[in-house]
Image (tube, rainbow, N blue to C red):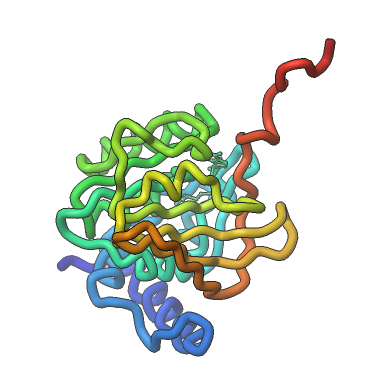
Length: 230
Ligand code: SAH
């Protein structure tokens, strides 16, 4: 597979951080398929024009609307933890720039991605079409509700932190599938966790490592609720 020259150092930095965190994440290296997807997606197309010099630095970058494109190591790690492959249908909550969706799209059959900020959803949808990621569908909406029309999913990846795991996402997970989500307080302590749903519906939670994500907005925290403001 073609490797973008700029991504060579980025891949080395991801490999180094994976080794450095191996006791937390339980692996010495990420799968070759995930690393190949990271090598192939042109990250400079997903960052604002004035951030392009930093597109292959292993750190998050601002994308407007108070949001960020996640650090490449975190994108690679979450993709690896999700463990999805050919034939799978994956739901992402928090499209942002569309970068994580593009990485997933190289590995799985279909990617459904929800973004709450209308301008980001529209820009990411346009960008993904323009770059040829034909198996990604972006929709504007609140990820707390998931995407019931397309459920169940073979994996769900949430790229914004929630104080608690939204129940609709657990319900939309197929038996044998995994949810990867940062859980914790807005700008406070957050942990990346995996939630596995067994075929009989039994859930098991594993904490992976401390992270810093933008908050999952919407849900009960947004909008005027009945009876308010009268
Ligand atoms: N995955 C993105 C990074 C996302 S940053 C990328 O690869 O670029 C987190 C994103 O989640 C932001 O764009 C934010 O607007 C979005 N978000 C926050 N709360 C949300 C919600 N309830 N539903 C859907 N998207 C949400």
